[in-house]
Image (cartoon, rainbow, N blue to C red; front, side, top):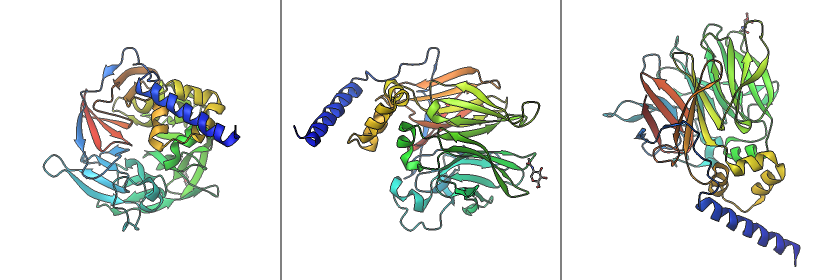
Length: 369
Ligand SMILES: *[C@@H]1O[C@H](CO)[C@@H](O)[C@H](O)[C@H]1NC(C)=O
């Protein structure tokens, strides 16, 4: 048989078998024992917008604010007013009309991690394509602060946390070879070009603290700023870098998770909520254990949706974990059927409620604790 035809036939057969497995939920990862229900979360729909990745409340407690897929940052003003435009990270917005257009992200911007500076009320923004930015309390067009480190452009800025005592921002650049819209190839090929960086506001200096990370993602400081956590999505781990004390400079595994961590947010008690994009199912395990599988999946004639479905094990679901200050899992929340929430990206605890963002859904979730 013609080798090209043979390859086409065998990849078609493989795609067909995978589709069957996915449709029967054979590949769906099981519920984590002892997990609590997240499926009764309430949702607040966005108005012609998609993918509220990160959520932040301003120093007055207003909001949340959230960056969406068309490059805007929206503000929630309560049921009566709804969502209003607050800020944007690109001035070239003429063609940014679709709620979701990944091919436009490098023009329209894609704001991810958001954090307010509580002293000034300034909003810091990690834009996947435009680096670290800041906008004042009145909103509008954000200003670029950092676009490179050690001569290497920021290629996929993702999340940050602010140490207000030291006036320092810790932030991640997920990859120096894959852009945000290529996040699946970045994971399937186990790309290890992610970095954790530090920006000193007074000296305006940028330093690389950790490099060689496999999809550097969420960032959170401990309550006393003695350490900073960074999510390494591809390895399903949270790493801890000590900043102060006898271990300063040491890095260690803080927590191993049942899925792929996105943003990390600390609550008032000093515990950490970690949103997982999805659990690690059979296909993801195969792809990440044997690079042959990972590379084969990428070569199959699959759409983004099909490849993503494969990655998550077929059935959309949501999972979040709460970690203690020492990295133990204290609580697991799951929506195993994806009834209310799917592919969550951040969990922000405020006044007895969890506000939940999702990078691939057109709504924000609220869960009463
Ligand atoms: C930030 O830079 C200033 C000025 O160079 C320096 O005095 C300070 O120690 C730096 N802070 C940190 C946390 O690195």
